[in-house]
Image 1 (tube, rainbow, N blue to C red):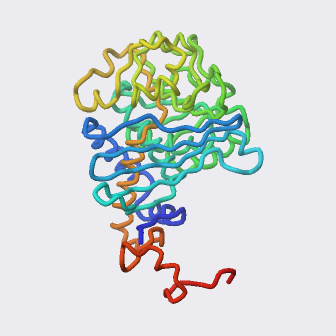
Image 2 (image 1 turned 90 degrees about the vertical axis):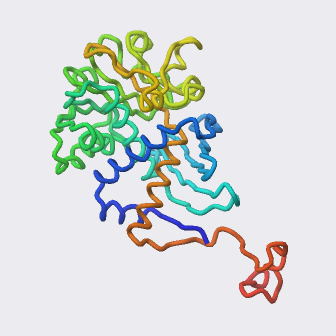
Length: 347
């Protein structure tokens, strides 16, 4: 049997521990794993692209545990009542190869992406930052706002989406969050005067969500939505003006904002800042950019945390995922007619 956490379990865990406490602990788990970055086996994700979206596998291992996440990204899904992103994940024991934990990861990915964004901003944004803009008010937006409030002390959010219904949804969900929310008329007015900008749009296109003339000195940009080949949100001139930080360079050059740039365009991996091997922001006027595409170590951290939370809560659920014959050499014996669970064909 394999330990299992489903959607209703995560909802229950959030109800018990609180979303802000989980976001804080998630950021701590990610930071701890990034600090030991060299211990991990790392590879860009395996992606299967189609005209309407992408299906990806994201593996990571620290030599003791192996994790992978299955995740899709299909921006057109909302038109037929489906989510843009769905996911599930597995933790396995490296010594035996057996899966030991399995979880839904649609909610979990939203939590870990927001925690990662806020962690990067804690390292790179000006310490006095208290205002932010969010451009793109889909499924990720509320998680981003809460993470930045919890981890950075953000007090006010100016938000914009081309879909008025998405803006109304965001405002309603944030009504009791303690965050002052202003719905902006356009992206330019949303970013005016703020300390931090998060872009988290869904369309699979080379878009210009932020143009160079919209970005003033000292802003930190959290570029989340550009996360696959052919999909960007920032005008290239912004990248030239700022200092760019990434997760795994090899992956981000394929999928992130820096896919627009020459192959030798300089970037700093965020783990280096966490470990003290590289400098983050150099001055209060510097523009910093976290070119975030999501990386498998973050999912590894999220699964570790979720398993720990489930155990703390006494959640005792498992699924019958792995065959377990009495004689490990006699797998076929499970199919015999006299095996306890055997059923006649067609029953």
